Amino acid sequence: MTIKADAQNIVNHLPDDASWEDLVKELYRQKKITLGLTDLEVVQNELSDADLNTIIARLKSSNSRPDDMRNTKTYTPGNAVTLGMIAGVIAILFSLVFPPISWVAAAVAITAGSFGVIRQEEKSWVPVLLALISLVPVINILT
Image (tube, rainbow, N blue to C red; front, side, top):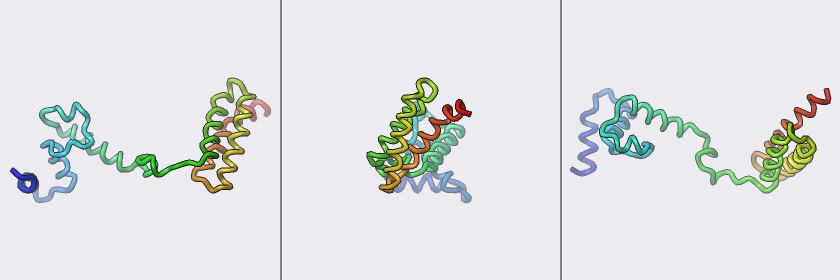
C-alpha cells in the first residue's frame, strides 16, 4: 500500500466530526508517526488513549516554549553578559558562605552588566539582578 493510499484509509476511518488532533492521535496509534515517542512507547504493541493523551500533551508543551528555549542558536550573549552572569552566580553562591568573595563578584557582575546595557546586548540586565540578589543577605545584616 502506498503512503497516499494508507493516509487516505486512515482519514476515511475517522468520524465525520474528527479534528486535526484526532488525526494525529490515529497516526500515533498506528505508529505512522514516531516523532516525540519515548523508546518504550515505540516498542509497545498498542498505545492506549492515556498514552496518546500524554504524547499530545508533550507535543503541546514543547510548542509552548519560547523560541529562545527551543533553539539555542538564536541567543548569543556578548562577552560582558557572559562574564556578568558567571560573576552573578558566584556572588549568589558565596553570599552566605564567604561574603567578601560575594562582594567582589557582585561588583564584577554589576560592572559587566552595565557594559552590556551600554552596548545594548540582549539580557544584559540579568547580571545586575543577580548581583542585587546576592547583596540581600548583607543588607539584612546591616539593618
